[in-house]
Image (cartoon, rainbow, N blue to C red; front, side):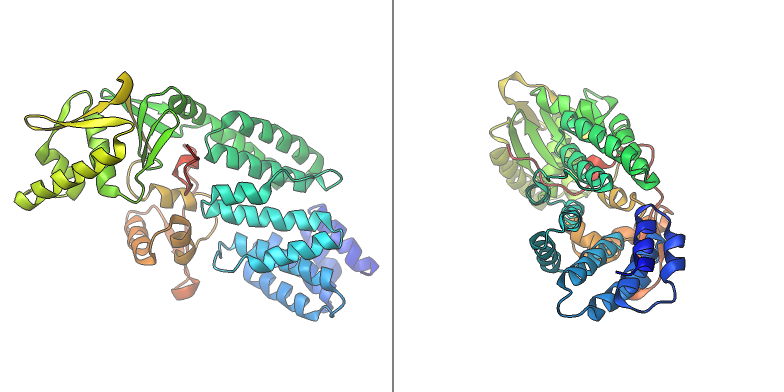
Length: 406
Protein backbone atom coordinates (compact mmCIF):
# COMPACT_ATOMS: atom_id res chain seq x y z
CA UNK A 1 0.00 0.00 0.00
CA UNK A 2 1.41 3.38 -1.01
CA UNK A 3 1.70 6.42 1.25
CA UNK A 4 -1.63 8.01 0.21
CA UNK A 5 -3.57 4.79 0.77
CA UNK A 6 -1.80 4.30 4.11
CA UNK A 7 -2.76 7.84 5.15
CA UNK A 8 -6.37 7.18 4.10
CA UNK A 9 -6.41 3.99 6.18
CA UNK A 10 -5.10 5.86 9.22
CA UNK A 11 -7.77 8.54 8.72
CA UNK A 12 -10.50 5.86 8.67
CA UNK A 13 -9.17 4.33 11.88
CA UNK A 14 -9.25 7.78 13.50
CA UNK A 15 -12.83 8.34 12.31
CA UNK A 16 -11.99 11.00 9.70
CA UNK A 17 -14.09 9.57 6.86
CA UNK A 18 -14.14 12.67 4.66
CA UNK A 19 -10.39 13.10 5.07
CA UNK A 20 -9.86 9.52 3.89
CA UNK A 21 -12.10 10.05 0.87
CA UNK A 22 -10.18 13.16 -0.17
CA UNK A 23 -7.03 11.08 -0.42
CA UNK A 24 -8.42 8.23 -2.59
CA UNK A 25 -11.63 9.58 -4.15
CA UNK A 26 -10.30 9.67 -7.74
CA UNK A 27 -8.30 6.43 -7.67
CA UNK A 28 -9.44 3.13 -9.20
CA UNK A 29 -6.75 0.71 -7.96
CA UNK A 30 -7.99 -2.13 -5.67
CA UNK A 31 -6.62 -0.75 -2.35
CA UNK A 32 -8.19 2.63 -3.03
CA UNK A 33 -11.49 1.00 -4.03
CA UNK A 34 -11.52 -0.97 -0.78
CA UNK A 35 -10.83 2.15 1.29
CA UNK A 36 -13.51 4.08 -0.58
CA UNK A 37 -15.94 1.25 0.05
CA UNK A 38 -15.25 1.32 3.79
CA UNK A 39 -15.60 5.12 3.83
CA UNK A 40 -18.94 4.98 1.99
CA UNK A 41 -20.16 2.38 4.46
CA UNK A 42 -19.23 4.72 7.33
CA UNK A 43 -21.37 7.38 5.65
CA UNK A 44 -24.34 5.00 5.37
CA UNK A 45 -24.10 4.52 1.59
CA UNK A 46 -24.25 0.75 1.88
CA UNK A 47 -25.20 -0.18 -1.68
CA UNK A 48 -22.33 1.90 -3.11
CA UNK A 49 -19.96 0.53 -0.46
CA UNK A 50 -20.82 -3.05 -1.37
CA UNK A 51 -20.22 -2.36 -5.06
CA UNK A 52 -16.81 -0.80 -4.37
CA UNK A 53 -15.72 -3.66 -2.10
CA UNK A 54 -16.70 -6.26 -4.69
CA UNK A 55 -14.74 -4.40 -7.37
CA UNK A 56 -11.74 -4.24 -5.05
CA UNK A 57 -11.92 -7.98 -4.31
CA UNK A 58 -12.02 -8.78 -8.04
CA UNK A 59 -9.10 -6.42 -8.68
CA UNK A 60 -6.65 -8.03 -6.26
CA UNK A 61 -4.37 -10.58 -7.87
CA UNK A 62 -4.08 -14.31 -7.17
CA UNK A 63 -1.23 -13.73 -4.73
CA UNK A 64 -3.12 -11.09 -2.75
CA UNK A 65 -5.23 -13.56 -0.79
CA UNK A 66 -5.16 -11.59 2.44
CA UNK A 67 -6.38 -8.41 0.72
CA UNK A 68 -9.27 -10.30 -0.89
CA UNK A 69 -10.19 -11.85 2.47
CA UNK A 70 -10.29 -8.39 4.05
CA UNK A 71 -12.69 -7.25 1.32
CA UNK A 72 -14.94 -10.25 2.06
CA UNK A 73 -14.99 -9.32 5.76
CA UNK A 74 -15.78 -5.67 4.98
CA UNK A 75 -18.58 -6.67 2.59
CA UNK A 76 -20.04 -9.01 5.23
CA UNK A 77 -20.15 -6.11 7.69
CA UNK A 78 -21.91 -3.94 5.11
CA UNK A 79 -24.46 -6.72 4.52
CA UNK A 80 -25.05 -6.90 8.27
CA UNK A 81 -25.61 -3.13 8.41
CA UNK A 82 -28.10 -3.50 5.54
CA UNK A 83 -29.80 -6.31 7.50
CA UNK A 84 -29.20 -8.60 4.53
CA UNK A 85 -29.10 -11.97 6.30
CA UNK A 86 -29.55 -14.15 3.23
CA UNK A 87 -25.93 -14.88 2.43
CA UNK A 88 -24.11 -18.02 3.48
CA UNK A 89 -21.71 -17.57 6.41
CA UNK A 90 -19.20 -19.92 4.74
CA UNK A 91 -17.42 -17.15 2.80
CA UNK A 92 -16.94 -15.16 5.98
CA UNK A 93 -15.67 -18.22 7.86
CA UNK A 94 -13.21 -18.97 5.04
CA UNK A 95 -12.00 -15.36 5.06
CA UNK A 96 -11.49 -15.52 8.85
CA UNK A 97 -9.45 -18.73 8.48
CA UNK A 98 -7.35 -17.13 5.73
CA UNK A 99 -6.62 -14.07 7.86
CA UNK A 100 -5.81 -16.18 10.93
CA UNK A 101 -3.40 -18.30 8.89
CA UNK A 102 -1.61 -15.15 7.70
CA UNK A 103 -1.32 -13.76 11.24
CA UNK A 104 -3.83 -10.94 10.63
CA UNK A 105 -5.40 -11.37 14.07
CA UNK A 106 -7.29 -8.07 14.10
CA UNK A 107 -9.23 -8.71 10.90
CA UNK A 108 -9.73 -12.38 11.78
CA UNK A 109 -11.36 -11.28 15.05
CA UNK A 110 -13.41 -8.73 13.15
CA UNK A 111 -14.74 -11.54 10.94
CA UNK A 112 -15.69 -13.58 14.00
CA UNK A 113 -17.46 -10.62 15.59
CA UNK A 114 -19.49 -10.04 12.43
CA UNK A 115 -20.52 -13.71 12.45
CA UNK A 116 -21.53 -13.44 16.11
CA UNK A 117 -23.61 -10.32 15.47
CA UNK A 118 -25.42 -12.08 12.64
CA UNK A 119 -26.21 -15.06 14.88
CA UNK A 120 -27.49 -12.72 17.60
CA UNK A 121 -29.86 -11.05 15.13
CA UNK A 122 -31.18 -14.50 14.25
CA UNK A 123 -31.61 -15.43 17.92
CA UNK A 124 -29.09 -18.29 17.79
CA UNK A 125 -27.55 -17.61 21.17
CA UNK A 126 -25.77 -20.93 21.71
CA UNK A 127 -24.13 -20.75 18.28
CA UNK A 128 -23.16 -17.11 18.92
CA UNK A 129 -21.60 -17.98 22.28
CA UNK A 130 -19.68 -20.87 20.72
CA UNK A 131 -18.45 -18.67 17.87
CA UNK A 132 -17.41 -15.83 20.19
CA UNK A 133 -15.75 -18.01 22.82
CA UNK A 134 -13.31 -15.96 24.88
CA UNK A 135 -11.41 -13.95 22.25
CA UNK A 136 -7.77 -13.20 22.92
CA UNK A 137 -7.81 -9.44 22.28
CA UNK A 138 -4.34 -8.73 23.70
CA UNK A 139 -2.40 -6.40 21.44
CA UNK A 140 -5.45 -5.70 19.26
CA UNK A 141 -7.06 -2.27 18.69
CA UNK A 142 -9.23 -1.10 21.61
CA UNK A 143 -12.18 -0.62 19.24
CA UNK A 144 -12.21 -4.37 18.54
CA UNK A 145 -11.93 -5.13 22.24
CA UNK A 146 -14.89 -2.86 22.92
CA UNK A 147 -17.05 -4.57 20.26
CA UNK A 148 -16.11 -8.02 21.60
CA UNK A 149 -17.10 -7.01 25.14
CA UNK A 150 -20.36 -5.49 23.90
CA UNK A 151 -21.24 -8.77 22.20
CA UNK A 152 -20.39 -10.69 25.36
CA UNK A 153 -22.64 -8.31 27.32
CA UNK A 154 -25.52 -8.82 24.89
CA UNK A 155 -25.17 -12.59 25.11
CA UNK A 156 -25.32 -12.35 28.90
CA UNK A 157 -28.32 -10.01 28.81
CA UNK A 158 -30.24 -12.22 26.39
CA UNK A 159 -29.65 -15.12 28.79
CA UNK A 160 -30.72 -13.00 31.80
CA UNK A 161 -27.27 -12.95 33.45
CA UNK A 162 -27.02 -9.31 34.43
CA UNK A 163 -23.90 -9.51 36.64
CA UNK A 164 -21.63 -10.85 33.84
CA UNK A 165 -23.28 -8.33 31.51
CA UNK A 166 -22.34 -5.41 33.78
CA UNK A 167 -18.76 -6.70 34.03
CA UNK A 168 -18.50 -6.98 30.23
CA UNK A 169 -19.96 -3.49 29.81
CA UNK A 170 -17.38 -2.07 32.24
CA UNK A 171 -14.61 -3.60 30.13
CA UNK A 172 -16.30 -2.30 26.96
CA UNK A 173 -16.44 1.22 28.40
CA UNK A 174 -12.73 1.14 29.26
CA UNK A 175 -11.85 -0.05 25.75
CA UNK A 176 -14.15 2.53 24.13
CA UNK A 177 -12.44 5.32 26.08
CA UNK A 178 -9.10 4.15 24.73
CA UNK A 179 -10.49 3.89 21.19
CA UNK A 180 -11.94 7.43 21.29
CA UNK A 181 -14.67 6.50 18.81
CA UNK A 182 -17.92 8.39 19.57
CA UNK A 183 -20.14 5.68 18.06
CA UNK A 184 -18.66 3.07 20.42
CA UNK A 185 -19.21 5.34 23.41
CA UNK A 186 -22.85 5.77 22.37
CA UNK A 187 -23.34 2.01 21.98
CA UNK A 188 -21.89 1.29 25.41
CA UNK A 189 -24.04 4.01 26.97
CA UNK A 190 -27.16 2.57 25.31
CA UNK A 191 -26.37 -0.91 26.61
CA UNK A 192 -25.92 0.48 30.14
CA UNK A 193 -29.20 2.37 29.87
CA UNK A 194 -31.03 -0.83 28.90
CA UNK A 195 -30.22 -2.27 32.32
CA UNK A 196 -32.11 0.54 34.03
CA UNK A 197 -35.18 0.67 31.79
CA UNK A 198 -38.34 -1.41 32.29
CA UNK A 199 -37.93 -4.74 30.52
CA UNK A 200 -41.21 -6.43 31.43
CA UNK A 201 -44.36 -6.15 33.53
CA UNK A 202 -45.11 -8.46 36.44
CA UNK A 203 -48.79 -9.31 36.98
CA UNK A 204 -49.80 -11.15 40.12
CA UNK A 205 -53.17 -11.22 41.85
CA UNK A 206 -54.40 -8.41 39.61
CA UNK A 207 -51.52 -6.04 40.43
CA UNK A 208 -49.07 -4.87 37.74
CA UNK A 209 -45.46 -3.81 38.37
CA UNK A 210 -42.71 -2.81 35.89
CA UNK A 211 -39.48 -4.80 36.20
CA UNK A 212 -35.90 -4.11 35.13
CA UNK A 213 -33.76 -6.92 33.72
CA UNK A 214 -32.13 -7.60 37.09
CA UNK A 215 -35.57 -7.93 38.68
CA UNK A 216 -36.68 -10.32 35.94
CA UNK A 217 -33.57 -12.42 36.61
CA UNK A 218 -34.35 -12.43 40.35
CA UNK A 219 -37.95 -13.44 39.65
CA UNK A 220 -36.83 -16.47 37.64
CA UNK A 221 -34.38 -17.42 40.39
CA UNK A 222 -37.01 -17.12 43.16
CA UNK A 223 -38.70 -20.40 42.27
CA UNK A 224 -42.17 -19.08 41.41
CA UNK A 225 -44.06 -20.50 38.45
CA UNK A 226 -43.56 -17.81 35.80
CA UNK A 227 -45.83 -17.71 32.76
CA UNK A 228 -43.55 -15.68 30.49
CA UNK A 229 -45.33 -13.80 27.70
CA UNK A 230 -42.02 -12.28 26.54
CA UNK A 231 -40.45 -15.62 25.57
CA UNK A 232 -43.70 -17.62 25.47
CA UNK A 233 -43.03 -20.34 27.99
CA UNK A 234 -43.44 -21.63 31.54
CA UNK A 235 -40.55 -21.40 34.03
CA UNK A 236 -40.05 -22.63 37.56
CA UNK A 237 -36.60 -23.00 39.08
CA UNK A 238 -34.42 -24.74 36.51
CA UNK A 239 -37.33 -26.24 34.56
CA UNK A 240 -38.59 -24.58 31.39
CA UNK A 241 -41.46 -25.53 29.11
CA UNK A 242 -41.24 -23.56 25.83
CA UNK A 243 -44.58 -22.79 24.18
CA UNK A 244 -43.42 -20.30 21.53
CA UNK A 245 -44.70 -22.56 18.76
CA UNK A 246 -47.87 -23.54 20.63
CA UNK A 247 -49.89 -20.28 20.72
CA UNK A 248 -53.16 -21.93 21.76
CA UNK A 249 -51.55 -23.71 24.69
CA UNK A 250 -49.79 -20.54 25.78
CA UNK A 251 -53.03 -18.54 25.61
CA UNK A 252 -54.67 -21.12 27.89
CA UNK A 253 -51.69 -21.09 30.30
CA UNK A 254 -51.74 -17.30 30.49
CA UNK A 255 -55.50 -17.17 31.13
CA UNK A 256 -55.21 -19.76 33.91
CA UNK A 257 -52.22 -17.96 35.46
CA UNK A 258 -53.94 -14.57 35.44
CA UNK A 259 -56.93 -16.05 37.28
CA UNK A 260 -54.85 -17.98 39.83
CA UNK A 261 -55.69 -19.03 42.52
CA UNK A 262 -59.20 -18.98 41.08
CA UNK A 263 -60.52 -20.80 38.05
CA UNK A 264 -61.48 -19.64 34.54
CA UNK A 265 -64.82 -20.17 32.87
CA UNK A 266 -64.81 -22.47 29.86
CA UNK A 267 -66.36 -19.81 27.63
CA UNK A 268 -63.59 -17.37 28.58
CA UNK A 269 -60.89 -19.96 27.83
CA UNK A 270 -62.47 -20.67 24.44
CA UNK A 271 -62.60 -16.94 23.66
CA UNK A 272 -58.94 -16.43 24.67
CA UNK A 273 -57.55 -19.49 22.91
CA UNK A 274 -59.73 -19.73 19.79
CA UNK A 275 -60.73 -16.06 19.43
CA UNK A 276 -64.43 -16.64 19.19
CA UNK A 277 -67.32 -15.31 21.24
CA UNK A 278 -69.84 -17.86 19.97
CA UNK A 279 -68.58 -21.24 21.14
CA UNK A 280 -70.27 -24.42 20.05
CA UNK A 281 -69.80 -28.10 20.85
CA UNK A 282 -66.76 -28.37 18.57
CA UNK A 283 -64.98 -25.60 20.49
CA UNK A 284 -65.77 -27.25 23.83
CA UNK A 285 -64.42 -30.56 22.54
CA UNK A 286 -61.28 -28.87 21.23
CA UNK A 287 -60.81 -27.11 24.57
CA UNK A 288 -60.76 -30.47 26.36
CA UNK A 289 -58.12 -31.71 23.91
CA UNK A 290 -55.91 -28.62 24.27
CA UNK A 291 -56.22 -28.62 28.07
CA UNK A 292 -55.10 -32.25 28.02
CA UNK A 293 -52.05 -31.31 25.96
CA UNK A 294 -51.20 -28.40 28.25
CA UNK A 295 -51.67 -30.58 31.33
CA UNK A 296 -49.17 -33.12 29.94
CA UNK A 297 -46.55 -30.48 29.04
CA UNK A 298 -46.90 -28.55 32.30
CA UNK A 299 -46.99 -31.64 34.53
CA UNK A 300 -43.48 -31.08 36.01
CA UNK A 301 -44.48 -27.56 37.07
CA UNK A 302 -48.23 -27.53 37.73
CA UNK A 303 -51.46 -29.44 37.51
CA UNK A 304 -54.66 -28.29 35.82
CA UNK A 305 -57.83 -29.22 37.66
CA UNK A 306 -61.39 -29.14 36.33
CA UNK A 307 -63.89 -27.07 38.30
CA UNK A 308 -67.64 -26.67 38.13
CA UNK A 309 -67.36 -23.82 35.61
CA UNK A 310 -63.98 -24.36 33.99
CA UNK A 311 -60.37 -25.10 34.91
CA UNK A 312 -57.84 -23.92 37.50
CA UNK A 313 -54.02 -23.92 37.66
CA UNK A 314 -52.45 -25.70 40.63
CA UNK A 315 -48.65 -25.18 40.83
CA UNK A 316 -46.44 -27.87 42.36
CA UNK A 317 -44.70 -27.47 45.73
CA UNK A 318 -46.88 -24.55 46.83
CA UNK A 319 -45.31 -22.13 44.36
CA UNK A 320 -46.74 -18.71 43.63
CA UNK A 321 -47.84 -17.95 40.08
CA UNK A 322 -46.57 -14.84 38.27
CA UNK A 323 -47.39 -13.62 34.76
CA UNK A 324 -44.55 -11.79 33.00
CA UNK A 325 -45.75 -9.51 30.21
CA UNK A 326 -43.80 -7.49 27.61
CA UNK A 327 -43.36 -3.77 28.32
CA UNK A 328 -45.78 -3.19 25.44
CA UNK A 329 -48.70 -5.42 24.61
CA UNK A 330 -49.52 -7.15 21.35
CA UNK A 331 -48.18 -9.78 18.98
CA UNK A 332 -45.99 -7.29 16.98
CA UNK A 333 -43.81 -6.65 20.04
CA UNK A 334 -40.88 -8.76 18.78
CA UNK A 335 -41.18 -7.18 15.34
CA UNK A 336 -41.02 -3.67 16.83
CA UNK A 337 -38.07 -4.73 19.00
CA UNK A 338 -36.05 -5.70 15.93
CA UNK A 339 -36.93 -2.47 14.14
CA UNK A 340 -36.05 -0.42 17.23
CA UNK A 341 -32.33 -0.64 16.42
CA UNK A 342 -32.88 2.09 13.82
CA UNK A 343 -31.62 -0.02 10.89
CA UNK A 344 -33.60 -0.57 7.70
CA UNK A 345 -34.84 -4.17 7.54
CA UNK A 346 -36.14 -6.12 4.56
CA UNK A 347 -39.25 -8.27 4.99
CA UNK A 348 -37.14 -11.36 4.28
CA UNK A 349 -34.61 -10.48 6.99
CA UNK A 350 -37.39 -9.86 9.54
CA UNK A 351 -39.02 -13.18 8.70
CA UNK A 352 -35.67 -14.95 8.99
CA UNK A 353 -34.93 -13.39 12.37
CA UNK A 354 -38.40 -14.12 13.77
CA UNK A 355 -38.65 -17.64 12.35
CA UNK A 356 -41.95 -16.71 10.68
CA UNK A 357 -43.21 -16.75 7.10
CA UNK A 358 -42.85 -13.64 4.96
CA UNK A 359 -46.62 -13.47 4.54
CA UNK A 360 -47.11 -13.39 8.32
CA UNK A 361 -44.53 -10.62 8.68
CA UNK A 362 -46.02 -8.66 5.75
CA UNK A 363 -49.47 -8.73 7.37
CA UNK A 364 -48.06 -7.57 10.71
CA UNK A 365 -46.08 -4.78 9.02
CA UNK A 366 -49.16 -3.63 7.11
CA UNK A 367 -51.11 -3.36 10.39
CA UNK A 368 -48.27 -1.48 12.10
CA UNK A 369 -47.91 0.85 9.12
CA UNK A 370 -51.64 1.60 9.16
CA UNK A 371 -51.29 2.45 12.86
CA UNK A 372 -48.33 4.75 12.11
CA UNK A 373 -45.85 2.66 14.12
CA UNK A 374 -43.53 1.72 11.22
CA UNK A 375 -42.64 3.25 7.89
CA UNK A 376 -41.29 1.83 4.66
CA UNK A 377 -38.75 3.00 2.08
CA UNK A 378 -38.58 1.83 -1.51
CA UNK A 379 -40.71 -0.74 -3.30
CA UNK A 380 -40.56 -4.40 -4.26
CA UNK A 381 -37.31 -6.17 -3.42
CA UNK A 382 -35.75 -2.83 -2.43
CA UNK A 383 -38.41 -2.10 0.20
CA UNK A 384 -37.07 -1.59 3.72
CA UNK A 385 -38.86 -1.10 7.05
CA UNK A 386 -37.93 1.27 9.86
CA UNK A 387 -39.30 2.26 13.21
CA UNK A 388 -38.42 5.05 15.65
CA UNK A 389 -36.34 3.75 18.59
CA UNK A 390 -38.44 2.54 21.53
CA UNK A 391 -36.47 4.51 24.10
CA UNK A 392 -38.97 4.03 26.92
CA UNK A 393 -37.94 0.43 27.65
CA UNK A 394 -35.39 -2.19 26.77
CA UNK A 395 -36.18 -4.63 23.96
CA UNK A 396 -33.86 -7.43 25.13
CA UNK A 397 -36.68 -9.75 26.27
CA UNK A 398 -38.63 -9.16 23.05
CA UNK A 399 -35.84 -10.12 20.65
CA UNK A 400 -35.65 -13.59 19.10
CA UNK A 401 -33.71 -15.86 21.44
CA UNK A 402 -33.30 -19.47 22.34
CA UNK A 403 -34.22 -20.28 25.90
CA UNK A 404 -31.19 -21.00 28.05
CA UNK A 405 -30.75 -24.71 28.76
CA UNK A 406 -32.50 -25.98 31.88
